[in-house]
Image (tube, rainbow, N blue to C red; front, side, top):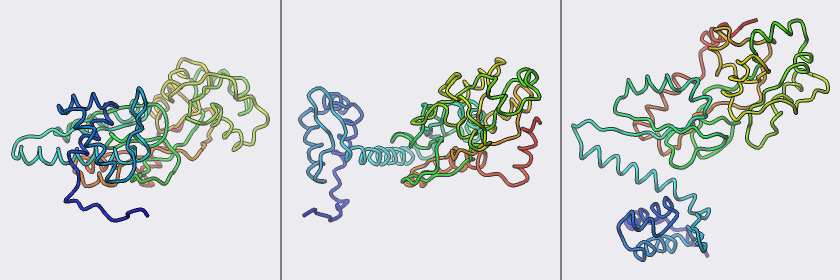
Length: 322
């Protein structure tokens, strides 16, 4: 039978958990032993002691590699964050009365980071000089890795262990260069799509023409070839191509409101596609007690979260070019 008793915190193997974190970080007992300056045999005993305590293996030991098991993947984020918080708390106490510097590890999609987040992060740093930002911008969708404190993800609504705050639902519209719009003035939507190059933005695990197909279904268009055209990893690159004077980009108007306001891009058709995606702020529930993380979360929600009706109307007016 499985022993379902809780582990008494008096016997939590803190040294062994440090050893487990180091082995997972280095994917090597040798590398971890060198980093912790202990013998490899002592390190191995620490990891084995945890595995005996919980009754499952944390690593799959292969001839030339070391891989976390599902149990190890589940345990690692908690160990990292717990040890980080212990470190921060001890540093705050030790340096009481002296300025302290906290680094927040933040993840954002590339287009979001470039178009919207950079000025906000600048203002956040000015208001909070004791908090540094370590920003990563990987391509793709899905939950953030374990070593990230706060993340903005491009995703559909999902139920996970994370606290998820919707910043805004993505609204896609066709954008193009004003010269291109002038050359094709008077055509209907089918004619526009048929006679112009299509610009695709890659979404993980979906066909490249997914959003264009969704648009065709919403607008009740006939048989149109959506396979043609260029594909880019980010909406930012897709719009840069459209700014060169060619192609139709089906992208989020919130990200490119400045190009619409300035007239560098136009919306030839007053249509919006909601494909179910949005930008979400993701935080682990255990992290909400961390002052720096809670402060950054509040700042992001204040700047990007759901707007009041008057603010929403003002935005719509600002991006309208019809």
